[in-house]
Structure formats: C-alpha cells, structure tokens
Image (tube, rainbow, N blue to C red; front, side, top):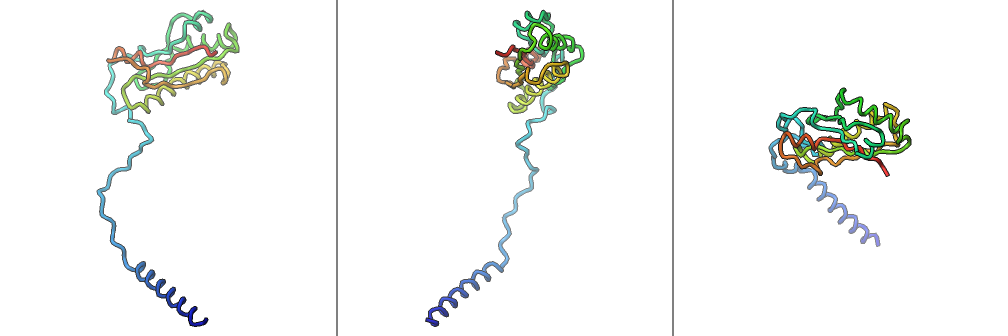
Length: 183
C-alpha cells in the first residue's frame, strides 16, 4: 500500500518539476506591431472635418405645427439653427416665449408636445443623431425655463433620417426641430 502511494507521489512530483521548468524559461516575445493611436469608436466624426457651409444660420428652423400655431395664435415666424449648432439664436426667443405661454397659461395649458430634432446629411449618422437630440433638448430647456413643465415636452431625434437636401440652400431645411402637439 505504501509502495503504490510513493509511486503516485513520485509521478506527481515529476509532472510538477516539468511544469516548473517549462514556466521558468523566458517566453518568446510577441511579434512587434507598429504603434497606432487608439481609435475612439464612441466619438462621432468631428464637425471640423466637415466642409465649411456657405449657408446662413437663419435658414434652419424650429417648425411649429399648424395645429399649434392656430391654437396659440402664433405667426409663422420660425426660430433657426446654424450648421453644426444646437444653439437657439436670441432673435428667436419671442416665438418660443409665445409657445411656452400658450402651453402654460394659454389655450393649450396642460397639454404636451413632442420635440423632434433633425440634422442635414453631412457628417456621420451617429453624430447627426446626437446633434438632432441636442437641438430638441435645447428647445425643451428653453421652454421649461419659461414655465413649461418637464413632463409637457418629450424630445427625440431623427438625425439625418428625414434629410432630403442636396446643397447648402436645401440642407438648411434639414436642420430643424419640429414642435408637434402630443396626443
């Protein structure tokens, strides 16, 4: 009985010694690969890489549905966005102020709206989706600062999905936020 156990221990010791010898030798270095800068796949293409537009910031817009315009008595004045921008221009504040007033104390008091952001087709699809979302979010932020309840506006983005422009003049129509009465 003791003889069998000694044999097992001797065999186990031999295997361990072989493993230790194999592990103690220096492994071959991996083949060298030329160094490359890391790629950040989460970031969309920078806007600076896009061609400079010749369009006017006043050509892109916040489009308020006819149903809301009529109910609120707002003229067809439209607020605009510049290329690669989600900033609301100061001259556009009056129409947005009227919109906020209509949804807080006017005929559409207590009703909700959907804000849908859009972008022109220049740039990466992911970047344009984010830009459309920022445009819608900025309109919502402006309206909530004017008294609109957070729950009264829902934002989404279509990015470049509905874009149909083909040049500077028509791309400006693709950069917009649609304001639609929620059901």
